[in-house]
Length: 330
Image (cartoon, rainbow, N blue to C red):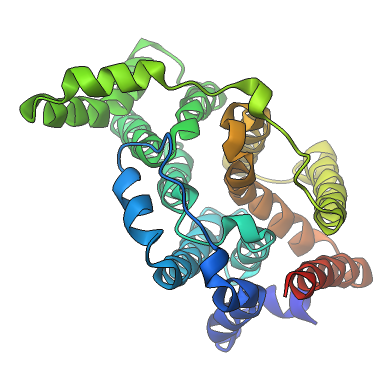
């Protein structure tokens, strides 16, 4: 069974993951002309990507698929190297791929693929803070990478709260830590402002930025189809059980550094959830921001849960719902 296999190290799993991903993305490759990108209100680094790849939609799907595979392996390395699951486990990569494949809206070279790339790097750096001698350099780096993510997907700005919360979790919330975070966060924007100033576009871009509004009233879940609600129900139920079991006793025997990393993951997850309404009409994309911390928590839960039947049952149910949704679309 899949969950059991991905708990252990098997050479064929390295090749099986892309195969599973390809099956879950079959509808995107078959219906790539329906994968549209929008450049309206796009972040500075994403605008021209959206304009170009909206005219080359097959490449849009192929490149986003490739980014997902790369991020899955990156994410798996981060979670296993930091001791959150067994070192030989491939469950983080498996859950990342499954969760990021649950919606047709995420398929295509959307801004969230670039944002998640830098947020995963940021998460890795945050986990390293506990062991670093030069802590505040790492804090600067985290702020820098979160800022780069925001230059692709503007709602990523909110994850500066994750950095500040992480400083509190690691007992580093002081003036030096806050200044390092702020300087790192604003450095990419200073370079961007310098570029606009050099080409005499600074006043225009500042005007555009202040005129950009994310209207909370635009937030709506009315476009979700019944099969989508069923998938959300299954994911939500499993996520709730996993979070409760993990954080209400499942970490008692873990070292302090591991418990703190799980606190960071929970904070990441909660910030991603709370900021959903601020995505406005991009709510269908913002769900992808929730998936990395959720994939890590689910990977830990399924790794530790000894009830093999329920592990396989819920995972199989989720896969079936995804496949039924894709067959309905075809």
